[in-house]
Length: 189
Image 1 (cartoon, rainbow, N blue to C red):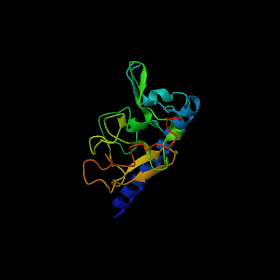
Image 2: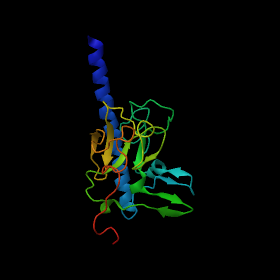
Image 3: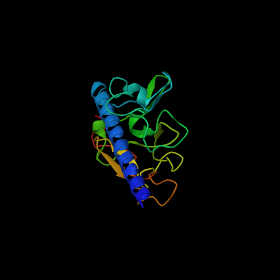
Image 4: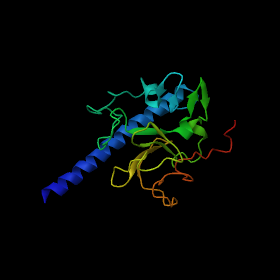
């Protein structure tokens, strides 16, 4: 009778640690955006061969805070093949860089309803996600059938599958309003 209670307590502790990791990364992205005209790190820069977390060096590092031996880049509940990273960034907000040009990046202050738009999330075997991302190939519902997500405003929450999505493999996919960044009226300013 003690083992189920211990298992639940361990899962709850891992969920809290994961949310803390994600909060630290969200703060790092926000600090980065403060230095780069309100743009967070790009999801991938093919010119520099870097992914988003590598741009956070100095803003949020592997040893920053009380992240433990795995650092803040690995969820304590993560089971998978990618030992370096278990979180991803929304590429339709972060954008990406090809041949030195930034493609489709959005300034964080231009995202409408930032408290509802996922910026970072639990993922598996990838470094970014978008409206067409699927579960379990990208999104990983490893916290009691939820994923931890940091929204653009910086808060972290356990996100259940989108009830508007009828496709089981795309619980957060298009046309999910949680992923696609609906922009403010002045987004071209």
